[in-house]
Image 1 (cartoon, rainbow, N blue to C red):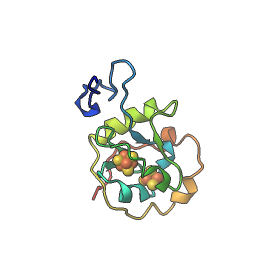
Image 2: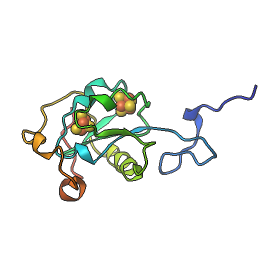
Image 3: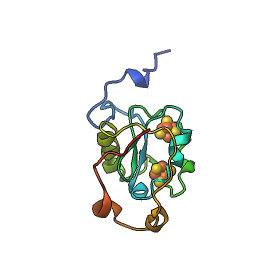
Length: 137
Ligand code: SF4
Ligand code: F3S
């Protein structure tokens, strides 16, 4: 039987994806819905502590995420998605970029007092995205 290569041993391109054939690593990403909601239920359940905190949203480090999927149903506003969903390339890039510079967060803190007001608001990235880091743990 031919050996199946270990995903961890593959060389990743800048996008975090493998360039060869059908092999593609998966991750979960935090999307626009998180902006200004930041409920932080997600950080409590991640077994590898791969959430990072910005001023008004969190991101997931794509190389640290083990794709367990546990965080996805924990988010009350459905902001966490597997990157296999269409049109999430932009969010994969944002998660990758900011997880390198924002601080790690592993413990839930209170959501912003006005979080509920932003749950269904469209276009939050253009209006509110902040590249500033949060405080982390
Ligand atoms: Fe953490 Fe699992 Fe969510 Fe990845 S999918 S961020 S490992 S809880
Ligand atoms: Fe954001 Fe949902 Fe976590 S709003 S902080 S992804 S629980």
